[in-house]
Image (cartoon, rainbow, N blue to C red):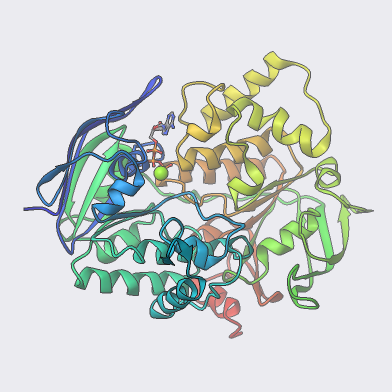
Length: 503
Ligand SMILES: Nc1ncnc2c1ncn2[C@@H]1O[C@H](COP(=O)(O)OP(=O)(O)OP(=O)(O)O)[C@@H](O)[C@H]1O
Ligand SMILES: [Mg+2]
């Protein structure tokens, strides 16, 4: 008898059949991965399971311990022992870590929250998980990776017997990923069943007992992990063979497009702490410059400071096309031909309530630069073209951005900046949460843009991506440049050595 059974689930949104008869089982102590392209229906299936989409808004049946369940909301699924860590962070930024962990379940006596008990339990939980996080700080002050770990602590505090993780490692450092997998290994021993959603197939194969592949809202296959392999899974996901993911290209480099000298950026929270320390670099027209480094090395802070979007103090000299420029705000940066796909699409990239067209044109850019597109038809046309070339899965350019799958939202952010036709484009984790097929398309797009003469600065935590795309790589460690390699010289070993400070 499986611990969980989902039978023939059908879920429709206006104009989209997101789930078209999906069935899935989960055993106690099983690690079951759920994979599929962006928009395949993974998150939707898990929202059905957790009561986000209540009974009556979908067809099919959910059984836990062989009994049919009818969830009217998340509280009901929690009571049935189901905990879910959502793809999009859902912590309340204004509340402390401890308050977030016990939100709605605060320990209380006579109706009054027992704060010392709450923080005592939160401290113990975080310690048990080996997470060096202070439960008294506001959740919003933590980096994305740490917020993700707090979400995990929150789910575990509920003593769930079924744990769903929807792309939990997207924003984690390598050591945080190890911490997470250690925790999951323990949970498996305790008999917790886990459903694990990820686009990182190496993670999928690391712990899975079974792997289920969804495509266009249907189950295409459920394999025992030991009997299948990465290629078979990818082929099932995209419905075709995927060739060499990094096409070999040569870019001819032109004049220097952007040069930055002696950039130092300070922490916004800790006075005097340098996150980026006297970094200088230049990027030429037609060149892809990769910036490698571990999380926390200062890569995002570097780009944000150039763009005048960093919250803390920063000093630097910037030249565009060989002339010194003053960039005091993001709109100055845009006016100087710099575009920026930021890592946190929710915070900087996307207005979830607005349509794709508004996000890609007016809303995002007018706000930043004061630039106004006047020709609506031309604009719709350009957006439709970008949607097609990036393979954005949506009914129309008038679809509301918030209703798209996570990966498709990321593609809109990329498309928005491409439409401004920048001469220098910053890409910070451009393929986070993107499926393999779409990744390949984004890589081809990056190569095409470089070929046309755009200067590209790429930050990515995926080393193969940096190595596969960059003409040149600089490596940061604790805010300083610790290595520089050409495409020919760069090896994973050399880059990692520089990134960990062993150079
Ligand atoms: N609230 C909603 N309203 C309308 N359509 C939706 C809504 N939520 C999801 N969809 C659509 O349902 C389909 C499945 O989306 P879902 O988020 O489940 O994909 P996913 O497999 O999780 O993708 P990703 O890997 O990008 O996270 C997509 O076509 C999406 O646009
Ligand atoms: Mg999803």
